[in-house]
Length: 340
Image 1: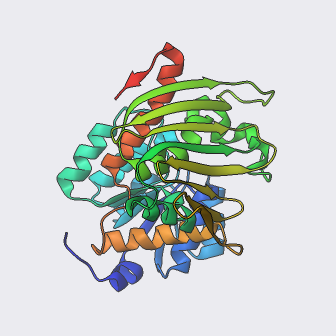
Image 2: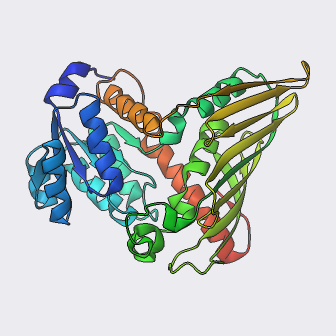
């Protein structure tokens, strides 16, 4: 792929952040931290743009059309999921490389059109996958690639957190997670688990799902989901995600022919048991900052833009992961397994 000096990307390329909610603010702050000098911002809520101008010295825009007409080299789409594809498509047609927050979209509508536009123009893309940059999951993936546990038989990924605790500074009922019209719901909101399982085991070929709303939370979307995934590699995995758990839970387990591995986000640790040695090795990162994985993802995006390394999760791979998540919901609605 053609290369551009990384220093040029940092100092000369204009980066446009579309959507300046909590994740958009995080990306602006991280772009500043890694040395990006030219940052622009657009959000339909102009007070958010004003805040970004005051805090980080960004250049604000009152419309997406004006922002794209100014010629950004890269656009970060950080709006609610239902807007991702149309905004990314407009940016691609303006010739901008793309970072799109997870999930790629709330449906497959328009995704193939976006994919065709990006590939025809040779644009570089990265779709949000911050958990791939956690050192514990990276160590797990390295162990699997090295064959340290032998043939993988089964995996389990689990997430749970009480939705009102996610953003305690705002009314959870107004956030996109709670709203069907914005593409919320725990299946797409926590697409992270499907994402890193695909990263570990490859494409999924069959999905069985159960999805429901079982709590008294004042939301329009599902708050609980279970899924069984069968991968082309032969691995089977179970996924559990919820908006219910009053204690934060985020962990994974991999059971293999020659041992077992466990990863936990809190505390930040990874353990590996090998039956041949009858012992467990453990690694931990007690002072790990959550933003570190977002920073690593940002640095990776800059290197992708400079042509120094391939995207960890380009648009085509993100399409498959979205298809898997949507199949979880379709399976639940139809009462049958879905083959991809």
